[in-house]
Image (cartoon, rainbow, N blue to C red):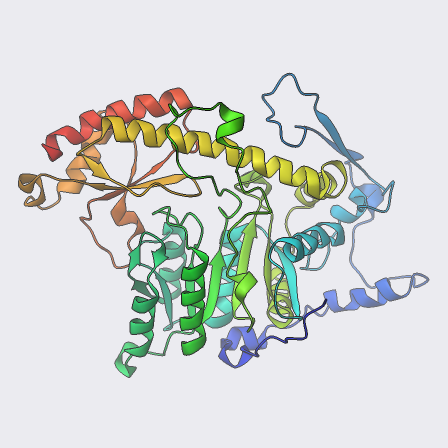
Length: 466
């Protein structure tokens, strides 16, 4: 049954630029072409599709639930012709043409149906708008509510691209303490309640990565999300829910030596049906701007994603798209739309996600096994329930802790031993320069190289932990 709840109007908190942002005058004429199929347009400066040199787009794609490297599985041929051959998706003449900032309809409609199925937004006037990935989406969400001199609330440790984006814009960062589940609600409440005029304008927006937080790997439980959301309601905050790892949730960690083959061990992967509820799914006010991306679950080079928000916010992001990226690349939208709407469908899409979850779960379990065996007494970490990262706290010896700049020495020791982790200082919005933390990604190195890397890390850390 459709919801009767309408989102709360947060537009009074819009920045001056957001208030002034409106539909492109040229784009606004498109409605006349859509509404009147007999209209002959001499208005739009569109190149004629007969001049497009691409007659068709074809890709060989894995069967849903199979890896491309699985040679025993026949590949699917995904082809998009210049002109639509069926009603499921558009032809290349549409995907390669200028369009509005909402995205090509079949692509956007998949995102909309998927969001409805998985997150079931509680208010009625929600919508989706396309993005070129979550970094692009973040900037557009940020600029609606933050401008020079404002403050963005972030986690104590956060994604470096956020720091690198916000600081040059003259926007300050206010970090919130974290624990094993991410941002601590009481700390967020204290920050907001204790805000004073000499700190500048009261923050209007908070940014968080609730699943497999980058860099810590922390995942918020439903109870934690509800507590964070309650604080956001209390202080009237807009929440950016940046969730690129949402679909990379796993079963609980079990040593690889445990009884059971891969099918038995990973039979309880969540797929789409057992994922933790998102912040969007508990949002009754329309104060959550959710960012989704295909980067971690299809491929980052596609530069495709979508944003879910109240329609009046999605409209503003559409208008911003129309003066920046227009929309994600047409070839990417065409491939993704044909794959998900036609070749795989929603059922095949879920089988693909389970396969991806299994791949990273195996890597997580192997990497945790290796670290527990070979780095005991050298590092501490919380086993992640999702994502791609382990967040190490190096157990420095008393002598090492007393030496200023010791973590720079640790980093140089790692490089000398031919292994690379990311120093914790790079994730610090407060500029903590000598934290004993490091982020290790188990997502990219081969399973053989993961073992090599842990051996080398053991050698690198030994002088500083004995």
